[in-house]
Image (cartoon, rainbow, N blue to C red):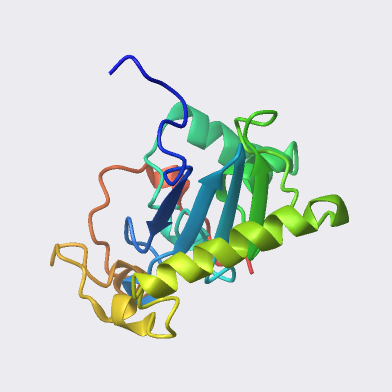
Length: 186
């Protein structure tokens, strides 16, 4: 088709979501997120903001592969320098996030707590909730525990957090030894 932009007015948004991408948290739990993109705005609802999005620090932030950039960011935080980079990449997130993706495509400025954006945030939140309720999303219907109960598929890394904390050393070849913090950060 040679058409672009919003061709069908009923298709003016995208719903997004994630439950679990990788291991590294207690009980192999995920970092559940639901979101909506509409009218140049991105609204995210982080259902478990007390969890570490990239995986727990003491187990190497396993949702982020090892790299020179990851190493540099972790070393800067450990040295007490430029900790904002660590916060952006690995820190805990607010329960709600709102970004003006036209002006802030990297999503660095969370607008969710600003009164100026409250009506936009609430409208996106309501639409997200209504559509996920209609789709019978277990997380929205209060049954999110069903996702937490799914067993991680690879037995070699299943229960990584508990095994690692007990002194077992499950293989995590996608991260560097230096990625693991010496203990919990919270």
